[in-house]
Length: 164
Image (cartoon, rainbow, N blue to C red; front, side, top):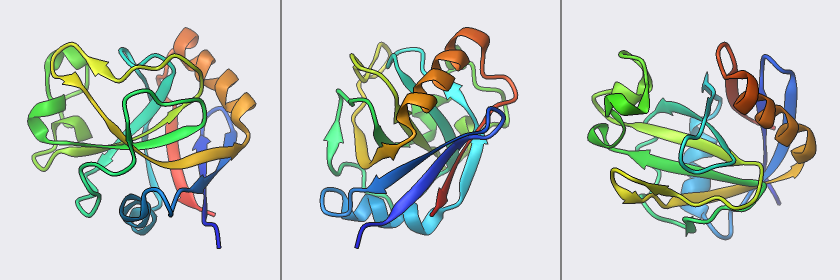
């Protein structure tokens, strides 16, 4: 039986529904499911293009690579596992004290809302993400809100993930 999560841009009141890809990424799905709910500041990607994400305390049960991609498509929901040294660079703009600077590293829960994404970072190279869910309901409204985040800014917006 399929499992679903909700993903919300809280300030904008946008909620979508995503189906976990238990067959393709069983370990990642289980780790995320057991860690939910999660919520944090929303960020719009600088490098990947059409990505909105949040950083949460590291989900240590998640595998480093499972169902990986460097070219996510619209509706993909990914997990990225980061060591502290990978995202603490001041050039990335994360505030001191944020999850990006946690001693144990951080987990990045991300959604992709448009085409032509490429997970390449000039500092470290390719950054594969584990695709663990696909958005099945609400992607058009979510994409419009994510574009608004790009134009208007993310200040005050939170991205939340919860079991349905």
